[in-house]
Length: 201
Image (cartoon, rainbow, N blue to C red; front, side):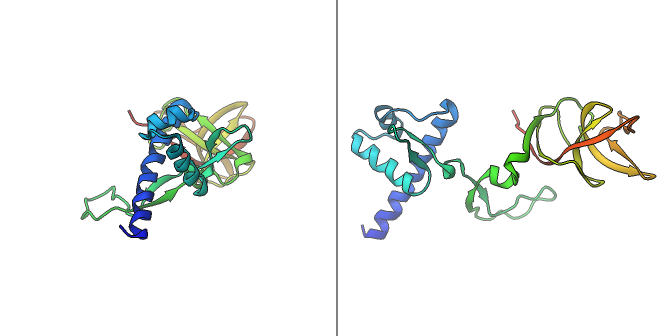
């Protein structure tokens, strides 16, 4: 096998090794000692494990602490996003699906110091946001009509769509069983919802 073939095979194996480490980390929130790493990766020799970890380190997936512990680096948390969108309307012809690296945090969070994750409770926004969703909220004090916002209205938090009627701001639910909220006293914007995290099953 030529050098290119060896390199391609090694890169393919490293992807499998990385996937195993990602699954382990997702469950335990840490990476184990060399002996356990060998079991996870299916490698007997400690030197083989070390070489894999060093290759993943060069690619930015892992780093080593001063006390000789391996921990995830930024790229470790990359996921893959398909280059082909799936239609939500009529079915379309299927194509080969390729993927490129994608960081969820990079996609949803533009201002980390001003971003808060807030669990959603209740069904007043059921046509847009579900009970149990986690709203990705970027803190700010102003918003435009049409923005999905977390607001403080008359001293209470709520998540609604900001609207304007006759020059007055109000909060629109996404459930016809709930009325539009017109502030009796004060309406403050806590932040704008820039994304949602929803888990099925």
